Image (tube, rainbow, N blue to C red; front, top):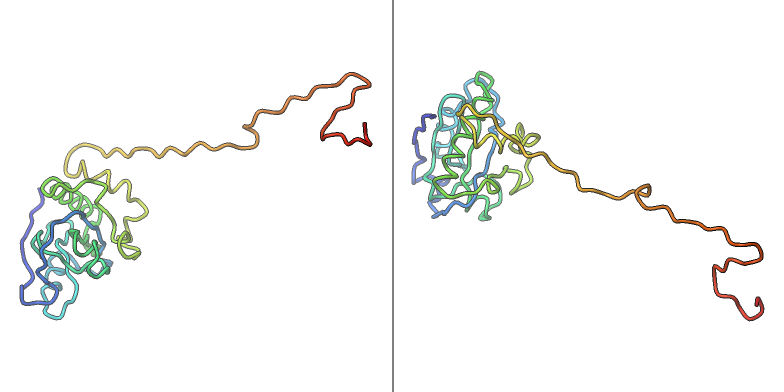
Length: 202
C-alpha cells in the first residue's frame, strides 16, 4: 500500500474551479520534469501556487502519492477545455525526476489506478493516456508500452506477473492463396469460344 497525502489546492484559486464531476475516465500523464527533486511533493507545491493555471488530482512518485483535488471536482489537465477529458476524468501525473525510480513510480500509479477503478466503477478501457484527449505525446514514457502498462494495473504491488493478451493479426488473402483455375485440352477440330460468334464468323 502506498501512502496518499491529501494536500488540496485552495478553493480560492482559479485552478480549482469546483465544478461537480462524476468521473468516468482516468487519464494518465508523465510530468516531463526530469530535474532532481521534481517529485510528488515538489509538484504539490507547484499546483498550490495562486499563479498556477493547471491542475490534476494526483501526483505519484516512487515513494508517495499526493492528492490535489477531491474526486468529485474537475481539474484542468488535458487541454480540451470543458470537454470530457477535463470534465469527466481523474488526472494522474507520474514523476520522472532524475533522483527517483521511475519504474517504481509507475507501479505506484498502477496500484492507485486499480483502487480508483474499484471505488469509482471505472473499467480498464476507460484508463487512457493524455494523448486520447488532445493529441499531445503524453505520457511520453508510456505510450510505446501502453498495453503492458494497462496489464500491470491488475498486479501492481502483488507477487503476480502481468499478462498481456497477444494481438492476433487479421487473416488476409494473397494471390497465392486463391485456387488455381483448371484448364482442359479440347479435341482437335473444336474451337474454344471465348466470346459470342458473329454471323460472319459462323
